[in-house]
Amino acid sequence: MVGLLSPKYVRDNLEAIRGSLKKRKSNYPLEELLKLDAECRRIGVELQGLRASRNKGSMEVAELKKAKKEPGDAKMKELSGIKERIESIEASLPSYETRIDSLLMNMPNVLDDNVPFGKDDGDNVEIRKHGAIIRSKSPSHEDILTKLDLIDLEQAAKVSGARFFYLKGDLALLEQALIRFAIDELAAKGYTLIAPPLLMKKEYYKGVTAFGDFEDMLYKATDPNEAKEKKAIEHTEDELYMIGTSEHPIAAMYADKVLSGSELPKRFIGVSPCFRREAGAHGKDTKGIFRVHHFYKVEQFIFSRRDESAVLFDELIENAESLFKKLKIPYRIVDVCTGDIGTVAARKYDLEAYMPAQQEYREMVSCSNCTDWQSLRLNIKYDERGKRDYVHTLNSTAIATSRTIVAIVENYYNDDGTITVPDALVKYMGKSKISR
RNA sequence: GCCGGGUUCGCCUAGAGGUAUGGCGGUGGAUUGCUAAUCCACUUGGUCGAAAGACCUUCACGAGUUCGAUUCUCGUACCCGGCGCCA
Image (cartoon, rainbow, N blue to C red; front, side, top):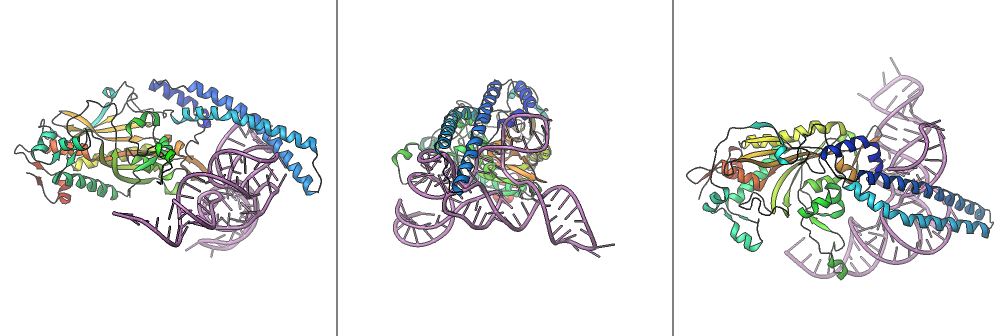
């Protein structure tokens, strides 16, 4: 079950956690957690002793009854007293446990030593750049696509609201082509395709993200009032959220499981729509389909041994790069700094593509090594030579459709108004040019 | 939605108020001239302890009855049948 993360982990890794929180300039209340944990263990020792005497007493009663003798009133009174003391101590525990649990669940991951220090995304460090600029500038994708009658944002805004869209004809096909392209490329590298559930329980979401921060990003799909009304519908009790990415249900695919060391690493391709509320993004990227409420994403996900995750992290970013190389879109890789990395990841690279209309590099791919943050919370272990350890989880975008579409449209726009189909996608499109 | 049957270690399984049985698999060890066999130990999580060890916890989940619950009662989830409804 989710929430089994133990304070023992914190005690065992105290120095690393302290150092990492400092590097993050985090205001996480570590001292409160340690104090509560110590207090809770002190109570636990007392409770354990009482339970031991209860069990011993009960055994004695059992022995006597077996010998057809009665235990006597004094004995039974003593046991009743123990029972009451146990019950009163047990009643005091939940308040500690709830607080400890919530502190543990939201504790930021221990950063990799190599994460650059910085305040925000402006301090991310460019580590490499690839591909010559195709067009130094272009009209916006919105203008290009509207003129070609391939997109309808106005009607989508009317029907669904801001940041929704209709893709039409070849553009809708381009989306499918991108999905299939990414799947085929990764499948050829031995990754297994997963189509995950698109709704997920809150309980598991808490194991996969820092839910307090992330909840605003998600659409909730159930109505808590239904449970009261006793409607004849499934899942009235569950709090279901529409997934923000297939990373989340794939991470939870092995919740409470013990994998065998020999089957690691397990490499997966997730494909799903991704739903995002984009709360707090008012006024940002409002034109076109760069930042929208849903898009398709082909995702890479790996469950690995502790000692392999650093190498596999490089594998994931290289896979993503190879897709953008084949699409011939110029990009750069940035090493995401302490101020921008977020709670879950220990290390993160972003791939940013050059966008000629904005004349800027913009995020296309985010690649994270989450080390044991998710597995501690989802209780995913592996067994090697009889020893158990928590797996490491890694994820990276392969292709996120809407943003990649923007990159293709703006980079492959021709001055005659047409769009060239990247060579790698021609076989999926059945044509090499999109025109009116 | 209704009526049955179920959920016990990674897997299979016994147990019907007295403290969880056996097997398979896995890990470690012992032994033996044969790609293997046999035997022993360990194989939920945790607390105290320098250690040896002791203790607690664990039979889907949650509540109740009890000195004591895998076992009895109530509720919930999920799985398998049957009926009904339905894309």
